[in-house]
Image 1: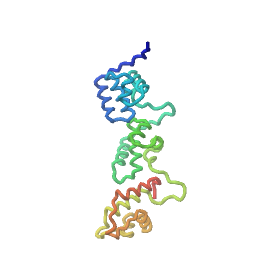
Image 2: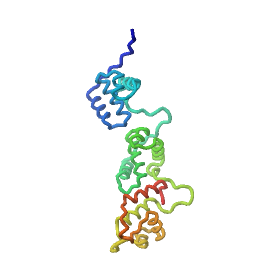
Image 3: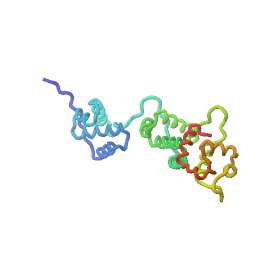
Image 4: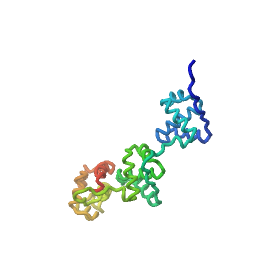
Length: 247
């Protein structure tokens, strides 16, 4: 006569819990939490651990773990918990900081590296763990750790790149971006295109500096037929420079 294993803990859901689990299972949370939600829904519909494992494509042990966790802690038991060890620095944004970070994520001219860091901080401020934020944004865990810690220590100033050792660069990346966008999207008064002299006068930079920037991005405004670059195309070049933060 074969022995029967222990009977699975019964899962009974309230209407609110079922609605929340359905929402999670639909993909409004991380893939891991969505999988756990599907496991609990299967269990609540009467499936055994073996049946739920087959339905959800996981091991029986995985179903057993999350069934027990849910019965003990309900919905909170399905969320990822910070691992023991060094406590993450609290991240609380002021209204001004939140507004500035949001502006960086939405402003078309913002370099992509800075927009990503802003999204990291906004997501962290919502209460997500570093691991959750990394998964949601599709980036490395270490990247979230770095910019969260830098922000806690230096606030908004910590999100810009520090100068690298060696000869100090003379032009901020934002200045380079302004020159490129102005060259592409505007004209100097009644003239049909910018010259080095007119752009130098407009920007306050030297003609040689304007020449270096135009050469770097292959900008030739005096060649009207060939000058058809878009801001989106040139932004790829700006992103290459973004790792340095300066030109």
